[in-house]
Amino acid sequence: MAQCRCRWRRVLLCLCCAPCVLVGSLCVYVSLAVCYSMTTSTGPSSPAPIPQESFIAPGLTRNGYLAPHPTSSFWDPNPHGGALWNRLQLHIDRHYNPILMPKSRFSEIGNLTSQMEDFQELPLQMQKFVYSMHFRDYPVLIEPAKLCGRGLRKGMGPLLLLAIKTQGQNFENRQAIRQTWGWAGWVAGATGKGGMVRRVFLLGKNHVEPHISELLQLESRHYGDILQWDFHDSFFNLTLKDLLLWDWLSAHCPRARFIFKGDDDVLVRTPALLDYLREQTIQSGGPGSEGMKGFMVGDVIRAAVPNRVNSTKYFIPANFYKGLYPPYGGGGGVVYSGELALRLNRISRSVHLYPIDDVYVGMCLHRLGVHPIHHPAFLTFDFPKKEGVERCVYHTILLVHKRSPAQVMKLWSEIMRNKTECSNTILRMEEKKNTLPFSVKEYIDP
Image 1 (cartoon, rainbow, N blue to C red):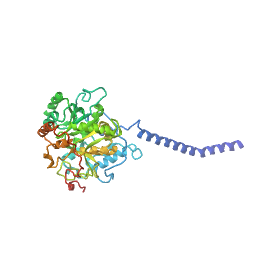
Image 2: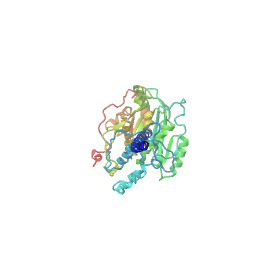
Image 3: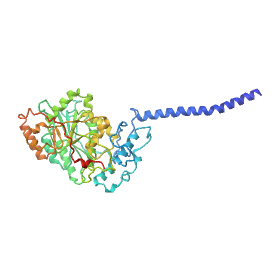
């Protein structure tokens, strides 16, 4: 009888303890699973891949990795604000925060056009941009062979790579640049020793004039400086040229010390620019220094807001973007370090495309915590009228926008002819005026 009672006590004890043991085991399992999920999602050894259906143009299978979750926002992060870009950016930020959205995919954002009010009333270029804004990886049609390796010791890169945005039909612009400020090879400085310069023209595809593709092939074989991708070349697709250039640089020219990125209607005093860049390298502590990792210089525009005037090419509707613009280098061109180009390539993968290329670069800089340097010698909006007639005025600038091919040829000849007479002329150093390319009323958010 005593043995029977003992057995029953053991049975009851097991029945009472079993739930506690199960609950305890479950807690341990959940804790381990959560820890493992967070480390594999955010750890540096296993970055999350880009989903196949997003950011990839049809016909391509290459995949990359997105950059880390950003820490701050300049745009309006309110998901109920109605602006498409803001919602997309919030979604991608949450995608890389495993607590908020551990299993999210970009495709969950749904049909983009159906989420924009009055989409059919938008200008055609904005409609086309929204349709294709998820695509950011396009095949290369033409590219230069060993652009950054010719004439350099093994492991060395050019001091300056000139990356110039152009269109297929702008042959005269490209030819004027080749014969003047875009000379490739060793370029002497205005006062210093100068450095090795390389040149590449950035193009999309012209679907209106297909015969231009054949002409570009001939031009590429002759000059070896054409880099073309298979996307439609348009104003709102200029951002793609920045993205694809950064990716191309990472693979083909990672040791370039500095990159000039600009338009094909500018005049650049390349010798003076080389002197300036060597000075900046010394002042920052040399190549690879912290100063060089975040170096960008140009005509920096601050406190800008989206243009709401429907008739301008810069028009950005309120149902696409709400918020301020971060500081960005505007106008005809900027210069940044090769180290920064590689960083921009990585961080750009976590910033949705934006139709204004200069603003998009500013968005990426903001995510990196980089502050572009303003220099008055970058003239986005030309000289003041009275100043433009002075004899040595072009020896005070590093860049001026906007100039025709004929003007570039003439002005370059004058600069070379007057370089001895104007040798003591210094770069412009006056304070930047707080001006924008349009009236303030055109920029005010509704």
